Length: 387
Image 1 (spheres, rainbow, N blue to C red):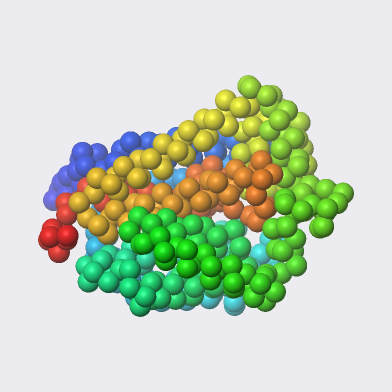
Image 2 (tube, helix red, strand yellow):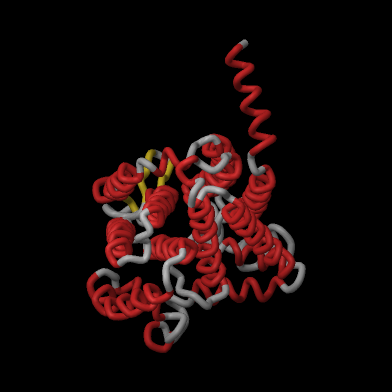
């Protein structure tokens, strides 16, 4: 009875103090995504039909993690940032031994356990946000945040994790999300503009080195294709084929769409590859039209705004940075994914948060939202009350 009473009190406290609005927005987006996924797979092979169930279970697990992470004290976790960094490197490094890619090659972005796939780079994003938030907070406590040594330490940590994601998992899309998270968190932390200018200069100078030594020919061509198609895909049947079909699908949807399950392009097997993952936005566009696209964007914008609101209202500098880092993750992914669907950014493989098929993405997103909810639940720690 005592255990039952404890559980009941915890549930009551959750509904009283956690951010139910944020949870509701996340569930609404996920359910909408499941509807779109089901619309695609039901007309294909029976094997693909299981993806709706997988996504539903991933959402249920995600909701459970939202609740669990709402009770996690972010300050305690952040104090173990060195262990989080070590975990991040080791977890991504497992791909060197057991990683598989889209064609089940020896090295890729996924760990496979039977029918279950785990994408380490997705999960590590949450750890990365906490690590950077702790570093910025520590330097601000010491009033050395804008010193060259502090910026150098943050840059080294970022470069190591970014390099592992890019080289080991060969996932350029997710690697760029890490970069977006870093930029937004540094700006939110109060980094002076001169460091952004210096960083942009160094990145520009290093681009030829990265281009020649760390990117495959396929990755290079995907980056070039939207901006100079005549150089890599003059017939538009190669690297631009996928995005061209996506743009066509969205255009044919008009204002109200062709109806769920009735899209001419999205309901044709292999017409738009990865229409249930990277190009789920084109499904919304063709089948639900402009109105459906706006609803997708509105849900994501509402989630982002809620994260920012909680962060700005937080009395905890660390919590504020975590909230804005999570918002940065969503902003970067949303812009990159919708940009791919509209043919204005390179097709480099990135999911649309909460909507795209992918258990790792859904679970990571809900866990991150749980951290944001938890920050809303807790008062300002004693160590930060004089900041």
